[in-house]
Every structure is written in structure tokens, then in C-alpha cells.
Amino acid sequence: MATKKDYYESLGVAKNATNDEIKKAYRTLAKKYHPDVNKEPGADVRFKEVQEAYDVLTDPQKRAQYDQFGHQAFDQNGGFGGFQQGFGGFDDLGDIFGSFFGGGFGSSRHQATGPAKGQDRFMQMRVNFMDAVFGKVETITLDVDEVCDVCMGSGAQSKDDIQVCATCQGKGTIISQQRTPFGVFQSTTTCPECHGSGKTVKNKCSTCGGKGYNRKRSNVEVKIPAGIQSGQQLRVPQKGERGRNGGPNGDLFIEIIVNPHKYFVREGRNIFISIPISSVDATLGTKVDVPTVHGDVELTIPAGTQHGTQFRLKAKGVKDLRSDAVGDQYVEVKIEVSKRLSKEERQLYEKLRDVSTKDSVFNKFKKNFK
Image (cartoon, rainbow, N blue to C red; front, side, top):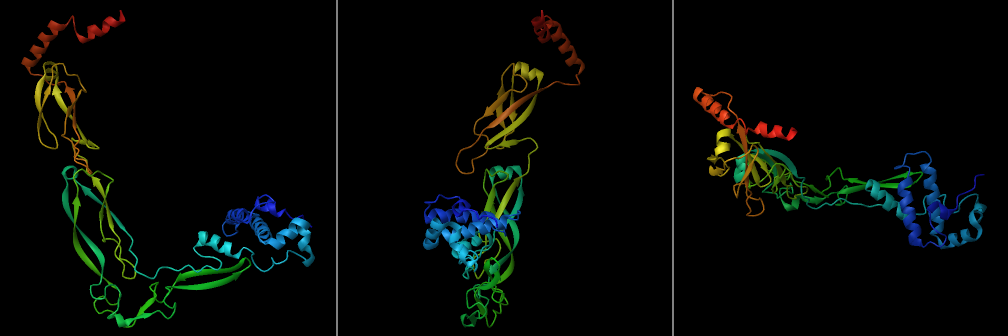
């Protein structure tokens, strides 16, 4: 006959462990090794060891006998006394199974029978770049289940037509039990007669047909605030799924997707744009009217400006969504070289090259290799 494992060792506690320490260790191990959760070979055996140890060590009389005589204290009855009939930790297993399955031993969990808010709905909306910068009001069409104005969601023609459900006695749930080798499983399910409301209706509302709600198509105005960005959401109250038992609808959440602009690029509150200028303008300097989201702004480009130089236009960006702060616009200069020159332009460029041959950019570069 195989030697039984020490009960303290089974639970991983010291011999002077308190009841609270034993209970804590038991709950941890029972969750880990319960056969309905752990399908590994030997988990059921380990679970029984843990349960047996718990049953003995939480009983003061059995624990005293075990501490004095060991397992022999219980061998006289051909086995572990008091363990053959189910589980000693009955209440604790109810808590454990509640964490796994929403029910368990001796559990009497009930679903709420009162009004409950409906589920939220989600959708996406595409908006133009400029509309995201300055905001706008968009109208969308929705099919929404709204609480019946006549019965106020009860589904009854009058309040006298509302009765307590005879199947669940107004609880909204029914309880069933099943005896298994591990004990009695108790499960709670929604009442099939009243669908969890705890009530039945004798005469249905003539307006909604007893449903408690009416399907309506309505136009909803959605305010898109200035400064909104892609990925941010707008909340439209009570335009989600219908509530339960006369409860309010859930909310509608709209995720905004901003269409890209052909020239402007937005990063947070700031706007970026690239503008082309000629090599002559970059060399001599010039003034240009730069497009911004707020209109054209004159920008002075100093002489000798290099390709890729960036200029800042203060407060020409986007308003912050949550404050009055306004971002900036950054203008990057791209110097473009003409591929086609007129005869006069070519003559001028050739004359310029003749003048600057000795001090050309390339000659200055070559001197570094001598």
C-alpha cells in the first residue's frame, strides 16, 4: 500500500500554520489542480490530496489526532473518516467554482431583475482634413431601439397587467443541481419564461406589441470638435443597444478617421508642408506666400537658404482639442533645379559659371583631398 503524503506537506504549510494560512494555501492549490480546470495527468489525484489534507487540518479534533498519531489515526475505519461523503471544504469550493464558472457548490448567484443599461455600439466615421482642423456638425442616420413612450419599457398595456413570473417566483433565474463524484454542482440560469425580468405580462402594450421598445430611424447630429485626430472617439449618449427590463440604451462611440491632405501633414497640433523654390531664389533670397490651414502667409526666405531648411510660422497650426493652445506650421524648403532652360537663362548660367569656376563648390570640396 502506498504511503500517504504528509498533510502539511500537501498544502505546503508549516506544522504550526494557522487556520487562515491553511485555508489560503488550500484555495490556491484547489484552483490550480481542480480536474475541471487542470487536464494534466495526475491533477485529479493531487486535488484529492489537497482536499483531504484541508478537511483534516481545519478540524481541531482531527488535526490533534493527526498530529499525535499521523495517518493511522484514521485507518481504523478502512479509510479517511468523514471524507467519503463529499468534500469537507464545501463552502470554500463554492467560492472557487464561482471564480471559474459563475456558480458552484451551494451557490445562489442571481442576475439582476431590475433595469439594466444596454450594450454600447461602435462605428467609424471618415472626415476631411480641414473638418478635423476646424470642426463641423455631421448628421448620421441610425436605427435605434427606443423605450416605448406608452408602456415605458414594461411591455404591458397597464401596470395591472404586470405579474410576478410563476416559473422563477420573480427572481429572474432558476437553479438546477447535479450530483457528481466531486459533490453537488449548482448552476443558475436565466428564467426561460420571463427572460430574466422576473415578471410576465398579461395584456401586452398595443403600441410596441409587448416588446417594451420601438425601432426608430432617426437623424443624429454629431459635433466633430476642432482639433480631433484619427483614432479618437466621440460619444453619443443612449444611441447604442437597447437596455434590459426598461433600462436605458447604451451609448454610441464613433471612432474618427481623418482623410490625409494632399500637401499638409499633421503631427499633433503642428502642421508641416514642403514648398519648392528655385536655386536662384535660394541664392538671392525672396518672399513667398505660403499656404497654411488659415490662409496664405508671407514668408521671407533669406539669401543663401539651403535645401531642407525649415521655417516656423507661429500659431498657424491646429487648436488643441482640450485647451486654447494652437500649434505651429513648419515650412520645409526644397530647392528644385530647372530641367529645361531658355536660351537666355542658359547664357546667364554659363556666364555665372565662368565667373565662379575657381571658387566653385566642387573645387572647395576637392581641396580636402590634397
